[in-house]
Image 1: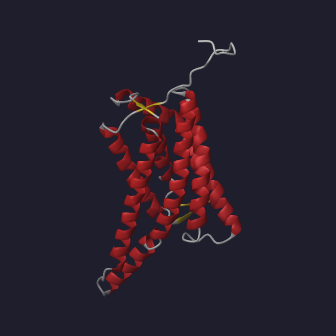
Image 2: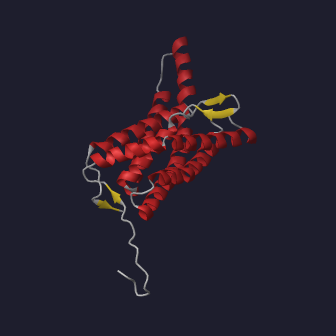
Image 3: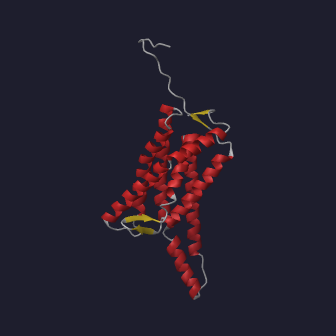
Length: 236
């Protein structure tokens, strides 16, 4: 219908989402929580691959962001935020369990003492890693989810690949900078050059992995949308 000025009024696309009613969200939430807990343990180990400095959780963490993208696209920002908070509550609980395990009295023979030292070395730094991961992922993933949903409000169901890539760049940069700033000392990074290497490699690697998996993410999103009974019934 023409507007008073004579120009056509373009209707804004209405973003569609699903409610939490099928098993898909629960499965993705469980996987995200497990990935975060494992990556927090792995991140306590510094890893050197030639000129590349990273940590032991590098191959796991991008999966959490991919799952966050899927949940944001299918269920919307509020549901994705709940998933982020729930995952990190479970990570904090796991960290508390590690602390209890460490302080419990163990056997005082040589094997028991060696085992205690190994456990302290492996799980002792995890609380600081969890703090770094909590602040970084909470900020980065929230920004990532918010940007993706805001872009969806403008484009509707079109250009999913652009939403996935655009939101990932910003979210991963914020995440990587915060995480590396807190976790660097735990894994043994103390000089500026190594820290810059750690940040850049982490950002480029995680963003690159997300970009490579965009076609797979698009397929997974489409698969879930078709099988999620309530998709399209929930507006932003």
